Image 1 (tube, rainbow, N blue to C red):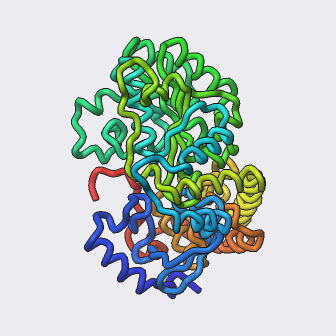
Image 2: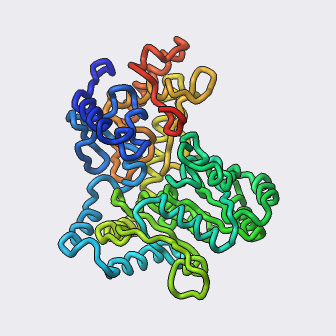
Image 3: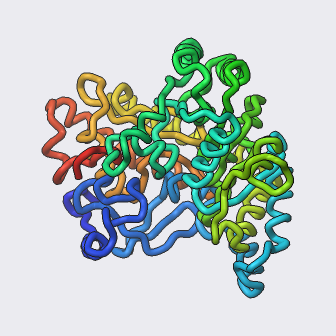
Length: 441
């Protein structure tokens, strides 16, 4: 099927209904139809394993499932069975359920570098709670975040630093400063410039590149020397790097860390974890000023906590992290070979840890290009591959990866034609895809 023949009439109609009722047409900006080629944004009917079906009846091999949250594949039997066991027992009560203590025990056994944990529903609540706790513990107003990492929270302390800062007071944004990943000297200069003002350093411990040797250890030492709290955002690295996250893999222990995404395999659950001395400030067994740490109506919902326990058991008992890396390595090698074979190896570039692959689409001059990304995505969709990234789930099989590589090769052949023409426009089929963070719609 060519992209000219590939149409999604029912998805297109559903998208129009969504836009009429939901701002942006989706409940997450990264899922918006502006992230996909024009009129080729599938609306999903259902998923199983590594595959999803759209409302037009097309089946896709899916990558980046649920914004990296569905790492075991859709409707994973062990997870759904754990949830099903709780359904007839009630979902939320006026006092803690025994499931809450069981989930906490399981989490702290899986992430032994943490001493206490509190669950919530989304990552933003957890990271904002970490920031609030750091400010309370240090008595300092400023937050230092890693400038090279794309997202930390929907809350003002972070969103004010993005191009979508409308509605955030300047006074709030002024309290957030930034440091570059991997540059200890620049971070120390920032800490010296705002000596005694920075409550915490918050970053993803690793992303598309491995931390430079000694970097995380150096950051730990800087935080200790300057009296600030070190926070690891492990929303992505949790489970994908190791069952205990990047802190478990690299052996550097933060004061606080936040988990989500893979923790529930699509069910809504996140976690704030860390040192007892800090975490207890949000509890009842201390003599200091109380910190409103996390208090969410649905953070105790039993079904998601059951899902989280099943996910952790599956990872540790079945070696899921190792499987994710093996699948990612096979995919990366295949895509690179296909791109090189079509003469676009310097333009379609796979990056990142094998368990968390992304791809860059570069133009004739080697610059990132939304136009070439659009061309590439159109060809993938027409070939039955839904891939805003190449982030794998453990449900993928060798046949799925082989099919993906075959479709990538076909996309790269068209990519080569566009490069030779010096203009991808004839292959776009409409407006180019857009970045999530931009000032105007």
